[in-house]
Length: 350
Image (cartoon, rainbow, N blue to C red; front, side, top):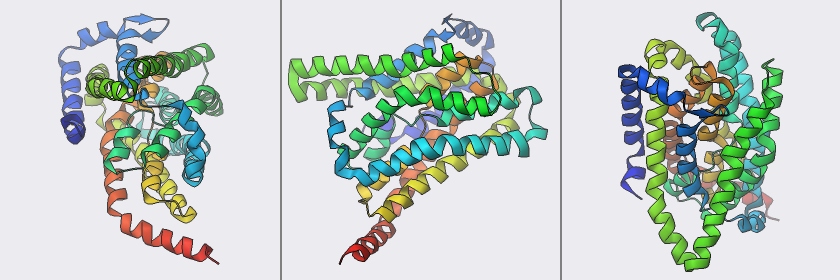
């Protein structure tokens, strides 16, 4: 594990502080960067998102989809949580907390935008960072790989319809052209590029060549993540310093949905009798969000200074430390999990 991965929480915290401070000190500079757009897509953010995603997508072998049946219980649980529970539970939490409970203390003109950001945050499962989470809990690598490959395939077709449905239920206008463009830019193109590079690396040097390339590009992905955090928190630095109460209120539904979905996936795997090395990654994949896509889509759909962009950036603020805490819980509860799993398997035995 690299020094970046080992002290990821520290680096994230430092980048958040640096971004907020720089955004507050040099607002004009960040506003200028924010205007570098093409077809409503911010080019610096897009470049960093691609640098972040593509190296991690190189790990994905879509041929591994043939192996999804090896851990069909874990795959099934994760698919249910990712696509049938998480987007809708986040929308419900957003409607309740932001649209009802906290409404009197939030800017009235941003309520719908905040809810839209929360929906974008939960509408797609994490693609990149789950490899880090899985490694930290010694997860079954073939399960993680096949689950991510399957999720990426589903995401190409399901992200836009789910977002459109939930935004429509929230009475938020859906700019379908921009939404579809976001899917193409941040899902389809990175997957195609990564698979082309992967095939070229395998053709040139086999598995050893691919592993060397992954080792060289691994730091690029994490540096791009940290640079993205500085840039995003620089864009939102003024709002974050001016609205700490808003940040705290937006954090509530995000925290609840992460722990709820992680706990649900973990428990369902235990009840299904799945191995702990599969249940751990399943819980983390079920709970984590594709925040790179969410942030980029929120900026494209609603603009840098929208409530939607702020909500997704709060998701970034929370994602890494909360997911690391979930990794800690999964690792510490291994004995409890395996005792329950043994009981389930014993009950099934004739």
